[in-house]
Image (cartoon, rainbow, N blue to C red; front, side, top):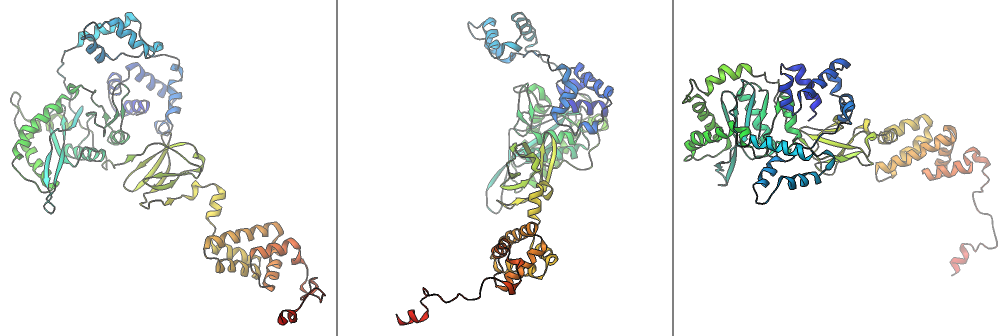
Length: 507
């Protein structure tokens, strides 16, 4: 995720404060303000900035701060657990912390002060207040629901996706085949369709479909990040081992267990569609069920608070796409994706590119910029080549056809045309004939069209319409000698060493 672009998009397209943007993107308010100030002072255009690579954006916005050194924050959860062990000391833990990198480590006194501040926060639970349209909490339930194939009798397990609005607790559930990335994205599309709008942020669990790397240096799955970009929302995964970060969905899961799954425990299903049809019916009861301590219900609160604050949906739902691992472009400028080879511009040879695959297209990106697009091909081992990706010599060779060679030979003369036609008539493969005609065309550039036509006439006369014969005639200069003045006699003269046919007949 490029946080510079996200700051500029949120500042220009929302009314969020710099502090709130910093909280959503894990940046300080001063950094948010600095990015926005540079953007305004330099008069940059956001559309142009989106075309730049990550390195180019970093040079424009962070060059003056490159020499600053940030201190590395200790792992307080690990330190707090370690301090509960017998004979453990804060001094030894500080020394262990420094071993990982003394250059960016806090001093002993700073380390102790930070630890005391963290201890004061332990076991303190804050009741969070979620504003209208602010956040949606999503997760998979631990329990599954099954359906039986009526033809084979095989029992299939379905995962249950759940989404809860932060303000109103308005709930959505959907049965999907598994917890894969494809099912995760499909469930989000259905969720936004159900809510009829987009919240500012989505808080999810740290499953692989959402987060590739958890922790302080969190890294989102690229497809999931693109979904957030498509819906203009912020993806905020919960911290590992911190269920309180998504307490709304945790309580929603318990509620679904009691209200939905308990009501279906004695039912048998014979298709996934039947399961989701039952979920839709029970969701109406769940969301219209009155609160115990508050007036109204989930649905009434959603209609009054969340729904008016949601952003409108985009014109089309997000198209599912998968990213492939980065690859180095080989010398033939073709990159393999799903056992098929696709071309990229030849200038990118030995560069690193990534492939983004949808149901219909394969896109290649280099440095965050799209460099090639192809239609998906299912031909295993085949190749798809765009002419504009080839170097000029390869493009010229690929464009050679028998018709083009015959058109060229007609401009030389009838004898040259006869030689060209013979190459395609006598060769078992068209490609062999193309190579022979390319060699013949090279002789025309070397000796000129007139001499080439004369050599081809001489080859016709001796009934040897091969490129090798034409080349031999041109090298010996026989194409410039009239046929009547040919120095070679038609027959060998008599000679005493020639035995003749009578000799062999006598034997």
